[in-house]
Length: 275
Ligand code: SIN
Ligand code: MN
Image 1 (tube, protein in one colour):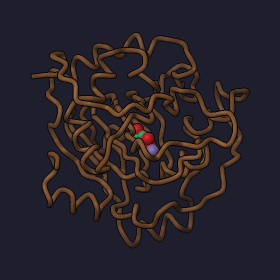
Image 2 (cartoon, protein in one colour; image 1 turned 30 degrees about the horizontal axis):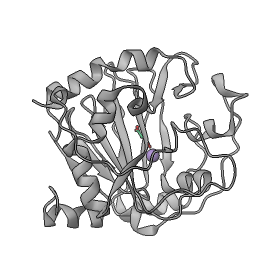
Image 3 (tube, helix red, strand yellow; image 1 turned 180 degrees about the vertical axis):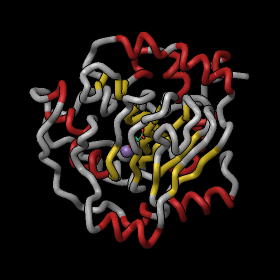
């Protein structure tokens, strides 16, 4: 039971993603955007900069810092499809806002997400799902996400961690920073990428602000730099089945990257997130 129709469920299973345009009311998105400046201006480790050392690339754990974002994770537009697709109680494993700022927002290389959670956090299974809320209109011009439809069916594509020289402000940072900056750690490289693109093509996931994009943790995805004059902010809440808890082999990553709060989420009706 849930908001997604049988045809939508079938499309998600086949393609590994599903776009729901207009899932969140515009005024709610405006309120979320209005609440971002203090999170973007804070100087804590949950805020990641681009290689220029100035532009904010991502802010993690917004739901731990501001109740509006916690309540957003319990909004039916996000929580209900996540619960339906995972068919069990869920909690938020990780939440971030990727800013992809006008002119300076950098790329995300081709990658899958699950390999990070498996390698870095000891996540045992794939009963985990991304729910992305577009905080701005996203188009090919401003660096919309690109996906390879159906690539989730391949499972985890094993790849060695990149040990590229770190540029910019993070030369001496903890190892987990390599999961977050532009030169990310586990990428889908050649020749696998070319083969996948030839077989399945690439789709750019454009949509108006307020759209919700559901995507599988093994979907191969990327996004190009934003050279346009328009920001392309997206909030990504990752929901995990409460039976799929990570089993870290050593020191776990910080709580803003891998939540310690595994309580099942229930819907919250926050009037600030209504029409
Ligand atoms: C991601 O891979 O998590 C983010 C991609 C993007 O924000 O474009
Ligand atoms: Mn990703």
